[in-house]
Image 1 (cartoon, one colour):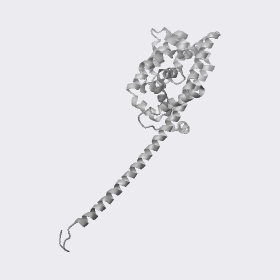
Image 2 (cartoon, helix red, strand yellow):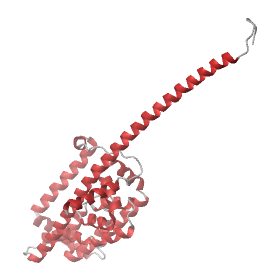
Image 3 (cartoon, helix red, strand yellow):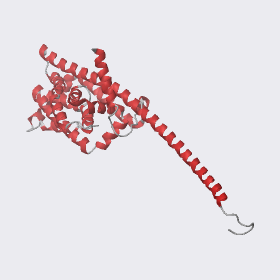
Image 4 (cartoon, helix red, strand yellow):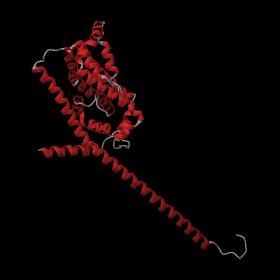
Length: 309
């Protein structure tokens, strides 16, 4: 049975060879050395390190952080329609390459508690994903198509999405793959909008995990086993689906690179064939002209020596 499933997956990938982006690809192995040492990326590395350090400090000194945020959180909660502020922030940072969704979700749990905080995060995330869909669909489509030709991860996810249907879209939404990345892929791979809409809505409970972490920063009492099991299950399912998608993408990456190599070899063969045909046609034309001159010379009527023709 396992062998049959494996054969089916390989057959699906073979079918994918006939599909995919219409234009030629330019996939290259990722150069980690260049990524870490290129000067233009250094500020992003520093920013990432800063965020990691801040997250670690937040986890270690969460009591002090909550005490520092409490006055601000109370003011924000007391503002009429103050919940619109984090909702608007979540909408804006849904557009790549902006980030900070996790921090905002954490603070929503601190300020509004579990269920109200989750409602705010879910609404902001959902509206942000819809906005990202239309932005890439109509404004950034050319950029996305270029990424599909040059970025191997993007190309593999696009191939998987294009041929997987609704269930693949739903699994990707539940996985650990960044949502703004997958939304950009969905919008430019002819995924049905309502499939995306429903999958995004169904996967919103995934956001409750981050809100719950914010609630834990405020609450000191021990949580019951029911909540621990529920949130642990959400976390495990998210990671498991991410690993499954990664395995599928790894197979498709191999197929994409093989296709690229086949196109390169075919293009070289066509160029060599075109050059050979050009040389043969040139040699034939020279021989034809030489033969014409010889026939013309013998066909000309004889003239007396020295007389002008």
